[in-house]
Length: 189
Image (cartoon, rainbow, N blue to C red; front, side):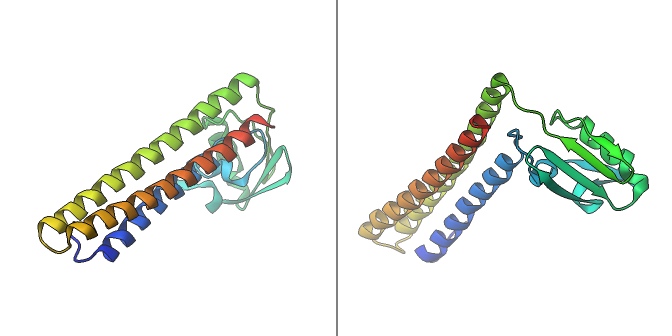
């Protein structure tokens, strides 16, 4: 994509880098840490009326206790499908249905599972960093192209490259912070 000025490019790069951080935050929120979280069930799809449907569209999800998730199914006939979807997910949860209410106790994590979750979180963070570095590379190429097309001077090119690097460093630091917070969360339950 070609840009007519640097502010367009910087805005585009900022949006793309923020999106990479948002994806990381979403991925990390799906990791089970031994503490109940309504986000834990976000990826689960329930067969409702013949169609795969996100769980939050057929029930309300709450965490009344630190180690318990309650799913209040709006249509009682869907409770068995909700229970099955949760049990069949790769989250390792064992739900118990009580009419239209599905209770999901969150078991404590073993040390081995904590280390495994930490590695998964690290992988998510690394993928985000790779995305950010690719965005930086594209930005740097755009700046070089702008200089080649005589839209900016050589001094401007150097200044813009420095700005792109600062934006990249700031975003990488944000990714590291989210990863460190999640790792702390995983290891201290």
